[in-house]
Image 1 (tube, rainbow, N blue to C red):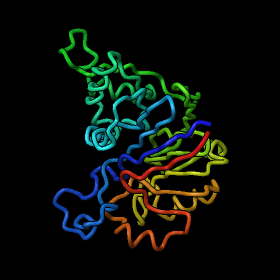
Image 2: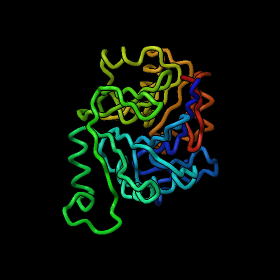
Image 3: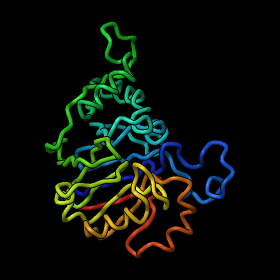
Length: 258
């Protein structure tokens, strides 16, 4: 039996929480559950270590979790809060003596090549990150003993990839899931899903919308991620959620068997 551990590296929205210079109660809360780095997860099995997204806090997240090896990076989409920290994979390049496998859609690969052009030039400066860009589509990804199923969802008009591993699914930056995608999520027991705030948003699920998606999927346990300071304090929000649902928090661990 293969036990998989998923760590929430960050569950905050693009600005993180606290937001710079914000005087609100959430941003000034002493509760660690209200301190949110940019959204990302760490997936560890017996033989594989994978990160989903390398946001601006990637270095801090890797240090906090004491990650010593990394086999691959999966990119949900190429917005800055999900790729800005990719330069720091060079530490893993140095240790492994090989390029980092980065799974991204063709459109996201184009953005990465532009944002990190210095990593792809003919005359590279010594020490730049070595990135092996691999096409991401809806075909299963095999990384050592992990089988990961990409699932396409929408972030308004932008295609974003969710990922499923056995009974677990991770969906960030989404506000629409097609019928076909919902079928691919059937049987998910542990769900981490985007819920930006309580009020309607143009490209993210609200808390109520995310709750409804979770119920349609039939997840046994659900945690909400990509959370804005506008959501409110974790202590206040959690006490009003269904018993099997809660806001995610940085550093929390989800374990399941394959």
